[in-house]
Length: 380
Image (cartoon, rainbow, N blue to C red; front, side, top):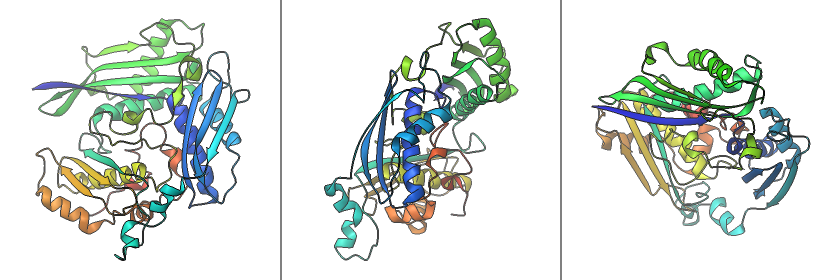
């Protein structure tokens, strides 16, 4: 049976990703000075203005406006006429401390209060988190999202290195992969929409993107004469970033995870310190799912954890290997529970999440990057 699956990615200049990057830059700036900082930073961008809000409890002092302007500059936004200018945009900041009601549960877990001997923070909120891995790519990610991320990253690379000297920072990519018997066999469709200077003709854009972006990334054996290409299909993409569309932290959660190929939990990642289980447990779930596959226990693995606010241990652990397992799923669950400390403190320590590493995660997916601690291969 043949099926088609599509995933998308966006460049770092997409307005939602701009907001994610500002939020993660604020988080890292606090963690650089105070590893115990509690940060929940949300950013909104639109029409030349940035609004930063949320809750921060920390001993550190950070110039949040300066951090935001530097983040916008790093992405490459300099022109108020077509997107946003890091020098002149208006930045509004409205931050408060973490609610004392939430802090009650985070500072010490219910288990610790009841004398169960667990020294850990409680989960910062209730929630469900998923992790996933499969053997379709070297990084054990689904092929559609893997290719989409690589194409989006390449769009930024050719812009920043002036390989294509007329591109803007905003852009989106979409990749459709054809599957036969649940195995990827070819790329059926590639969609690329990229911001550009107004004087550039569409035929030149199509030629350059095909030659210098798509052909540089997608293996030729996955492309054939039936592969369809839609490059700037509207014909014009000059106005972009927050001028073309508003941006918001956490609105690209499918891009951040598995491109829709696997389920996603209830919370986004960017701007949240690791006591927020939305982020830290999703990273741990990916780590464990990846190692289930890497250790040969399954070809495909999805894991769900669920937590209650103020409670250290997960309230449930769920594993689905889609019939690809080589040992029973009960055995896999037992290995997970026996090997890993799944309390918030256990996860934070194991994955070294109090370091200022989160800017590295913001763009082109939080998973599949081998330099991140949750991507390491271990023996289970």
